[in-house]
Length: 261
Image (tube, rainbow, N blue to C red; front, side, top):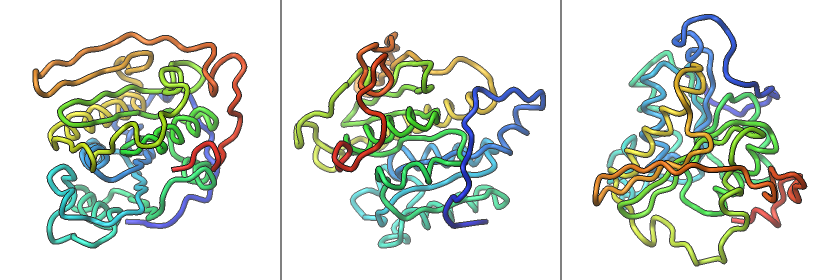
């Protein structure tokens, strides 16, 4: 087991082209999970069980009692511990030979490129609007494929972004909403099973991308309503006026002014 910071610069590629077995591709793969909460916990657990070789964990927070109903890698024995340490131990118990890299820090415009470097795929498990815009813009600018998901109450959504080839988050939402307009999970609440369902979808997207199997949620938005148990897929199209991936992008670099939390 290994902890530390990523110092190498990775070159992001298209779907794996190697002719070896999907399991061998997964073993060589590196996935970064940003946010070790209701989405990140189930996603990381499934990645470990699927045989992904290296998992990076990014989260500045500590385990809190109010979050245990949805953050399945943490228990009451972990209260007060950094989430990345708690999650690392649980993942190591699932698969002792798994390499886990821990980053007990918030993702920012200043450190995103270094954190994304060397990883093949990113999972957005955050619960703040600012973080989701930052991850999308950083992924597009660095060419890093990622899975977006969001949950609130009994509902959730997910999509996969392949930079330069598919719809990105800003194609749907060009500008962040005014501060306070969208409640956080802490403010509005979230049903734990919704996070579990969407986190598993995110893990599945990462596994499909890394193995080159199946059809990704690119140019598609998957929505889930736990109250009716209905899944719905909405077709998406790239927005030529998108400020980060459009024909004339206005966002060409990450900035703390634009991406303030």
